[in-house]
Image (cartoon, rainbow, N blue to C red; front, side):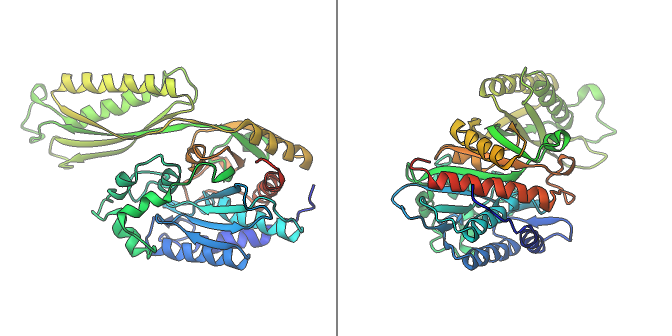
Length: 421
């Protein structure tokens, strides 16, 4: 194997510098798609790519590609990468480890004298987080064709600003709505995609295992339920006469929990993450309620069956309470199975490096979920303290990250050198 030296000190400095580009006070990080700090962060990352001698381009939705040309560029490239946007009051490692870690992997390979046969390409995906438009993985959805470009162009944020307007503000070369169709990759564009990421769960740390190799990624679905009851004075309307949309919403949230708990699959999870009610006054009966529900599983059949029970519960609850309801499907994506050949490649790399590894599923979804529709994929997980993520105290040590970068670098070298990725 190559004798690689991972510069964990520089990598940690990069992570810390990028964390300072934030709309939140340290240690929290907030970078919402195409905000001023997001644009600064994008420029910062592109500058790092250029300093490492990579050629950089950006597509019509702002996905960033940094390419290390290979000696046989007629063959599909091997890709890696992640995202740098961050939900409000998040941590500094989610996504960033997969971007800056991949950059250090490229750099370590170059320092070791490695010359890729297949090109290596590092992708910074646009809007992996759903903060701006309520839809995650926007860039990879468009790359894979998982979302219609016209639907993407019609996305509007909570302030009524469209994706096209945000793209124009971001200075993308051609921000016209119709150009989003150009983002989709041609079949066979990549030979493989491998994403490095913190686990965002506690299993690796609990087991004392330094590397997780992802075999499957849970399929996400999300729904918006709107409820319309009858408002009124909290003191004047007696209990038998009420059509309380808030209580209907509360029952629905419990039905979501119950359906997930009894699905028969250990990977089914359901979360009512948004619960808005009007008039939102202590002395007024809630009359208009909006729920947004996240429901996911690694098995499509059990997810579908469990969600069907939720739909029946919504109808029963609202009928009993005299509340009108409407259900909108925001997205419903199937799970992804990672390529066995890539899982085995990462396993062999770990074995050669003398590292223990566990094969595992990812219950969080990532851009890899959609890249699996483009090419063979897998993910490399490193532990994070207490399994915490999406919080300011999210943490993975420099040593843990460096181990993941070493595994990624050797994996990319193997795949880039192969006649077939």
